[in-house]
Length: 452
Image (tube, rainbow, N blue to C red):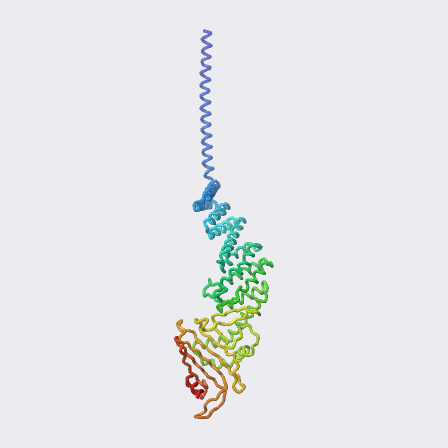
């Protein structure tokens, strides 16, 4: 019995131990399972955190870029930016991908947008670098233009101490304007807001604005260089030339001046003074009042201008015997002593509204200097033919008084020459034009009487 009892306790004891072990194992399994659930669940949450997704998208883009799969890379970087508009590396890496496929415009846009969204100086620096590299590449290809200059301006506007930008703009002055040097009209002539003159004026105004905020000798030198085009001859629409005068005066006031700027300002200032002399008579001629030329040709203003050329006085207007006055365009020519200017004549600008010619030649009758002026009306419906030229002369000449009496007196003479498309000209002369003894004769009859 004693042995039985021992064996029984022993057996119970073993059975209890096994039961206890099974309970502990189940607990361990349960705890382990719970821990696994927590870990797996935690990983799932972590992998869905926004910054993790952003980093994964950027990493994917980088792998695509390494494999030269740039479209896929751009899509991955775009995905990153949709999740986080402040991901600086996504902007810069996407710009690199765009540059790899020669899409600099998209590269500049994404870098600029990135700078705006993040205020990252690195993105701004990259943006400005792309601009400058693009400008240099364009000039190296010989394709530089006034648009190339405009493209570099954002660099000095963002960083007015960027010496590289100043160097590029300095080179652009010589290389970009050179493409217009063979044609005086090509540089600035245009009739819309996108004409080269509008762009040129924008360049000067933006440079001056930067200078006003933070003046520097480097920028001053650049502005004064750009203030006058790098061309021996350039043509502007008249209204553009008036605007140019205002811009140049601003440059002279804010930045400074030099001999070239002063020379051009003398032209633009004189140009407007001369136009003011002819404003009223042009208004009359535009509506067909040719008779008004009688009073105008003897007016003090007209004679004062005529005498400047007649006596070879100093003037920025080109001094010739027959001086053209028109309203559409002005040509500036650079000589040894600076710039001079003149208005375009009918042949140079057939679309003119009308041309007046000042006669500055010595022609005296008994010591009395003749006063003469010509007027050519504008083309009708774009057709310059038949081309008419009126010439009015105030002179001392004999007129017929009554049937035979010849009387010498000051009187007006009107010559009208009409030229057809084949070049044939018909000319008539009216003596004592507007006077009591007016007479009319064609030029052939006059010449035949002279020969006789």
